[in-house]
Length: 382
Ligand SMILES: Cc1cc2nc3c(=O)[nH]c(=O)nc-3n(C[C@H](O)[C@H](O)[C@H](O)COP(=O)(O)OP(=O)(O)OC[C@H]3O[C@@H](n4cnc5c(N)ncnc54)[C@H](O)[C@@H]3O)c2cc1C
Image (tube, rainbow, N blue to C red; front, side):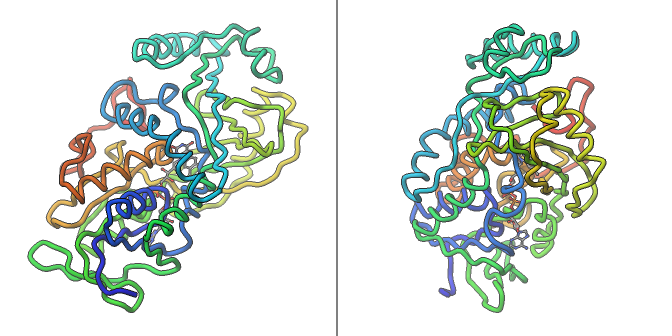
C-alpha cells in the first residue's frame, strides 16, 4: 500500500463510492476504506426510488439538491453500465401516489399543482386511468397522481457498479478494514492509521452513514447522526410495473418480478431485526392496496440503517475546527437519489474549493434545532 493519499474516504456506501469515483476522475489519488464490503449496508437495503416530484421537500434547498441529482441519473447510469457491464435496472414507469380518501385528494391536489408549476411531469388520473396502468389495484382506489419522472433502480446493483467503476478509475478500495486512529496537527489531519499502516493524507472524508458518529470521534468531533432502521420484505409479483405509494407505504417492482415492500422508520440503535409486527403491518397495508398480493410468495426480508441527521438534511461540507476533514453523511431516506450530486459537490469542494451548488444549507449543526413545524415532514426539511 502506498503511504500517502490525496484523499481518504471512510465508508463505502453509495455516498462514499460516489465521492471516490468523482475524485478519481479528477486525478486525485483516493483510498476508500470500508469496514465490510462496499455497498452492503443502507445502500443495499434501500428501495431505490429516485423521488423528487413525489417526495416530501417542496421547494427549498433539499428539493433543489434532489432535483439536481435526479437530473444527473440517466446519463450517469449509462456511464456506469457501459464501464462495468452491470445492469442497474433503471426503470422509468414512475411513481403512482394513490388516492383513496378525501384527505389524500386534498393533499395530492396541492402537491400536483405545485409540481406542475415547477415544470415536473405530473398527471391526475381517474380510477379508470390508474387501473389501465395497474389493473391489480384495490376497488377503493379512486385515482392517483402519476409522477413519471420519478424513476427507480436496483440500488444494490448501483452500489456494486459504482464501486467497480471506482476501482477501474484507479481508486484503491480497502475493504474489511477501517481507520483506527488519526494524527492531527494545527487543526489539520496529517495521517490516519488504516489497519496497521499509517497513511499521510491531504483530505479525509467521513461518509460512514449511520456509523459516522463513531468515525467522527477519531477526529474529536461529535457528528449528530443516528441510525434509523427501515424494515423491508420482497415478494414475487411480476404483475406490477409502477412504484405504488400510499402515505408512508410503498411497493417497488424490480425487473426480475420481485416487489419490494416497505418501510418503517425506527430509532432503535444498531438493531437490524425484522419483526413479526412489521411483517404483519406490511402484509396488511399491501393487500389493502393490491389484494392479490396475499397469494404471492414471500421471497426475502431485511432491515437497513439510514443515517438520520437532526437537521433533516444531509450534512455536507468541511467539519468545524479541522480544515481538511470533510463530512458527507446524514442522507437518511434520500441517499440513493442524492448520491450523484453528493459525489460531484464534495469532489468540487476538495479539488476547487467552490462547489457548483451552495453547501451552506447543509452545514454542520451549531446549535440545538427547533422541532419541525406542523406543516413540515418529520423526516425532511424543505
Ligand atoms: C429501508 C430503506 C429504504 C430506503 N429507500 C430509499 C429510496 O427509495 N431512495 C433513496 O434515495 N434512499 C433510500 N434509502 C436511504 C439510502 O439507502 C441511504 O440514505 C443511503 O444508502 C446512505 O448511504 P451511505 O453511503 O451514507 O450509507 P451506507 O450505505 O450505510 O454506507 C456506509 C458505509 O460505511 C461503512 N462504515 C461504517 N463504519 C465504518 C468505519 N469505521 N470504517 C470504514 N467503513 C465504515 C459501512 O460498513 C457502510 O458500508 C433507504 C434506506 C433504507 C434503510
